[in-house]
Amino acid sequence: MNEKMQPKKMEDFKNYLQQQGKSPVTIKEYARQVSLFISWYGDQDTINVQKKDILNYLSYLKHHKNHQAVSSNHGLIALRHYFDCLVGQGIICLNPTALIKLRGVKKRRLHYIYTPEELTGLADSYYQLYVKAAEEKSLSGIRPTLYKESCHTKTRNHVMLLFFIHQGLTTREVLHLQTEDIDLYKATVTVQTTTRGRDRILPLHATQTGTLIRYMNGIRPLLTGKRQSGTLFLPVRQDNSEKHATRALIQLTTALKRIDRHFVSLAQIRASLITYWIRTYGLRKAQYMAGHKSIVSTEEYLPNHIEELAEDITKFNPF
View 1: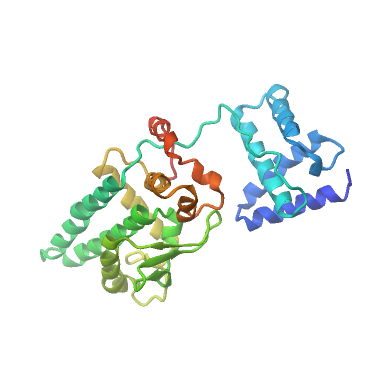
View 2 (view 1 turned 180 degrees about the horizontal axis):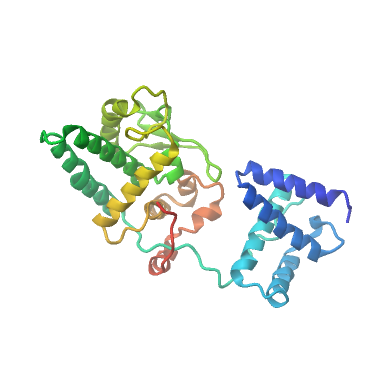
């Protein structure tokens, strides 16, 4: 092995992970995992690694280091990123970890996959039970300031919900939407890239546009106060921070759990929509609409896996 090349590859790998938006903790762990593999691989250059070497290493972890499948999978993921880095640099042509999957590793699975009609019904129920009820209270004359704020909050939350239901956005994407991302003339929303996604332009749903116009022209100006911010979704009477916007998602999730016993998290809505897109438009278009960088991420939602997905229990992110 060229002693000068391997450290350089590791440094390039860390820079690659930074460009991918990985956290310092993740970068440190991935580098550790790759270093363990390099130490096992011996006095050779990693450009010569083949699939059989990866399989032998995984066998070594299982039988000599007594690693469970989950632990070995962490190492495999780190190596997959490492060799992706080498492929991207043109150092190697193929990633030797491609198509290697470990048995016994639990997949992320959903409680229930909604149909588009059920998702629309979920949004309608939220509007009737929360937004409309808050509007009626605000007009009652009893504690008008409090109920008006409650009405504004629930209206904002309803508009946020529609972006989950019609565009399948992630919570991060919703929180980072800007007013300039909305083109009411063309009825589209531009979803800016995140650390794991891709830029894309998605159509606004016909029933969504009117609600969005009302929010942007009537409700949002009441929330901005003296603040100058282009963020689409703002907190009520709070400093303009993501922390308070995140609180809105917690409130929304809690309300939806009360409405529907099948509801688990906002990630479930996104998974349901991606499943529908695959069935309706095919994998490639679904990949674009979901903002996935890799088609592999989209394939996880293939309809023929849905029955299996619906049977298992998983823990989603808090929203």
